Image 1: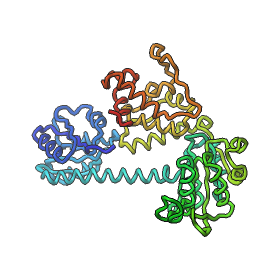
Image 2 (image 1 turned 30 degrees about the vertical axis):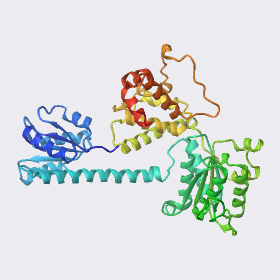
Image 3 (image 1 turned 180 degrees about the vertical axis):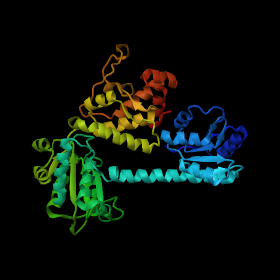
Image 4 (image 1 turned 90 degrees about the vertical axis):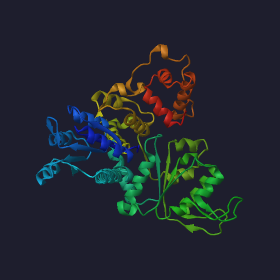
Length: 463
């Protein structure tokens, strides 16, 4: 995401351009220059994505101020430093009014020029970072729920009532990828308010991530010497989350033995470390999430009925994305803005109506996570202003694969599911081996572009 800083030079004096280019390249900059024709100059600058532009005021047959005006009107987000042999205040004032970030008078000092460029680029980067952090603070880190559909509106109303009541336990259900953790953090913020929520702990733990004996230690902590590996005392997440909220993700995977101990904590509002002698009071809001049908799990004996009833006193269900299709365009634009800023790549301005229609009608089995991953992939791989149906994956766009390319055996999804990334990684590896590591041939075997193959190789650490 971060590479060499890029400078675009516009000057018809090749000697000056050579000196500037060498000086900047020594400093680690990447340089592109325009010295002959200045037609379609904004297109060239826009395609280069420079961090700064050095623009001579007097060019053959055209004024540098006219080009400056054209740059600013085109919306190119790059600071422009004017180079001028005219040291009058009038010229400087004109340049600054038109949007120049600074100007240097010829003959200029190379070291001074380096400092000016460095300061301006850093200032721009700092502004982008501040703007980015400010935006994600309100849109992402603050966990605002994005969507204007009626189902989301009703859900927000219900959540606010639950949060205002400061209930002690909440159950959130929903398919994988619907944003259960995002909703959990949203509840935490609503409970304590924007200012207080930042000082109140929010601790998340995945109930499926550890074996039962380690999970118990993570939840409740342990005293030194309470078991073989207990070299020191350890606070559990209930202690760490005291005064705030704890997220028990994938609660449906918790083993029955731990379920009974968790129920005791919820009922008595105290916790005792493994090997401990005293019960410690804890004031926490427990938010449990699951993609399982817990009532069915109770029927087959996988989940305690008393814990289920304790958790489900206050619960809500997050609908899958296919049931809130009106929110898909809004979410798509949100993720496009987010990843364009993250990767400092603003090529894509939006999605065509045809592409939006396809995305809205798609079933999204991976829900919001799948949508987010797709938009990130498009931002990284595509260099177009508008996403068209042709840029979307064939399973989303409805494009059929020629029968000659279909494998003899169709892949069957296992009952327990499988990681799409694992499948993709394996296919990349198979293609590379089949092509004897010729990337061009491997890309053709997968029916993807060469750039897409390179991205996949980098993503999965293949060689």
